[in-house]
Image (cartoon, rainbow, N blue to C red; front, side):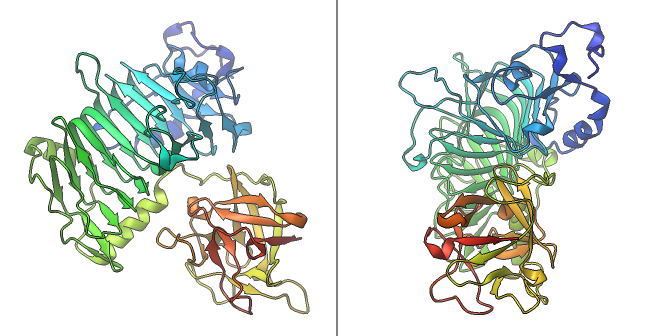
Length: 495
């Protein structure tokens, strides 16, 4: 590492042993900054500082805690050896200004800290941003550890901020939080947060999502998967909410003078709900009704055009709103947002995942005795099947190449080159399993051990296991997604 290259000859307040040669990272830094959009488009993060490489999963050595809390401007990345690892600090991270936490390509999970600041709470927030500016957090999984999330209430938020500005929260995954994924609060004197973008994140297994006290917020291209409430709740200030996907969704809310401009969002299913409660202006929103995307009722907001025209105009100039006029256009947009949301998994380590050997494997159903298989005439998006071996051995379509994907694995078929996949529109109990070129979370599987050395594969996207039903054990029969842990969900590994 180049320890001498300090900006303006300044002495580092953090460990100089953790500083890398910035020239090796400059292309990646520029690439991320080119993705900025919305009201947080000027967020600099640590672009003018040094590159700090985290190499520890706790608070020792070159730690994430030291990096975000030191006064230097820093672009923070993660060492290759942390690929797929879990970081857990003893205490919350008190983030200073001009920081980027960049998890691209490392499949990093950050868990709720060990110690809590409130004796009445069992869980703690991860990132606290108080009166700071120019902070970027991207491409990490924030795990709140609260598995009883449907009974959540007060206490821990993943990210908390007050009186902060130029903040960008991008391509993260938020799950299992007792309180909120992102909470923006006012200062005691009423000062709001300013110029924030929350883009391309995936929110799941959280009772309530977001609360905003902020002058200007962009909320775009996120997936809210079954969040029960506050998606978002804008208490004060104005939020431009566009091109988001809401599944099994709840009402959006405002209060205390907060305003939402809801534009070109997708609500699945529609089910006749109102998308607005409070001062919300709507345009070009779509709801899915009996398999078709329809604008009917989705733009009838209760308070009409409460958003001021200058905020609407400026928001659209700063954003990249995609508007649709056809069912196919909306479906394509829905698929794109679903596939792109959350940490990007395009950099996949060849290391084996716990529970599956590296290299090529075949998976034989304990129930049917048949192999998980892709036929010769299969196309991208087709369902996978069960097939028996032939006289010359196991067919090419039954061999799968195992690659690590953080806490799970991806399985690429030897014949087709496509991944075992759960589609965004087919991730319910009883739906089939497919093959796709996608490397999104729909292609990631959690390996679970079963009796006798068998394994079960649970989809990261749906939470269901690959399953052979009692009624579908025959040749060329499909496989399904089920919560069951019976023999129908158990597979023998063959090498």
